[in-house]
Image (cartoon, rainbow, N blue to C red):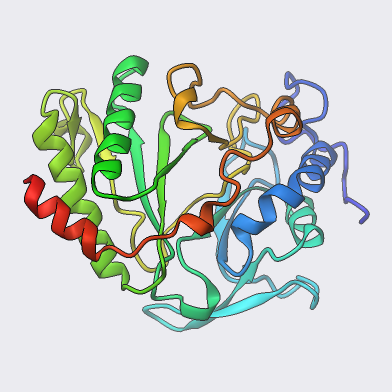
Length: 291
């Protein structure tokens, strides 16, 4: 695919080599075999920066009229209308989005066959301070709590300041139900570690604690996809990791310059994730007993 304006600097003139628009496209071309399975059949919100990250970008959900017909789409009901949104079902589409200066594709937590039934439960561990040790401890405690509930969880760097913890689901429940459950888990974590974590939505009410954000568990909400580049200096990548790596990997550890080598050496830390999908009935019972 021919990339328009390939030498356009998306990450600023001081960025390392390869962070032009062509470099971004080459990264997504190389990572597609690993990344596309996490995007396929999901509506995508495109975070675009036509003039690079030094200028304001924007989120775009509705498919632009100029997009080619071979880009797969899905009809999505919104509060106001029905719109077509992009799905990234193949390498070509992922590279095409890079050509459109989409630095970060953000994916729904549900698939096109049942948009109102999530197949993922997500917790966004958002630090209020630069206390990385506290953030890691809070994230590890969440993983331990989910394990006690019989839920297999997976962790990734956000590519920004925090970590994302994901539980694969069997797509049997509504977003209202999964969000309510996620909120109960978050409150249980606060009960265990009130000096470490909070569920206060307002930043001025968090008191320097790690915010356990469950808001992404909603219809139409999105999160940066695994292996997505973040629109930040150095082009950090939201990267799946093993739980045992949490103590040694920072949220912005991996970049477009390093993540492909990691995949080549270690493979995909989330490989086989779908085979570990759960329902939530037993977990609800266990959580009630724990509290």
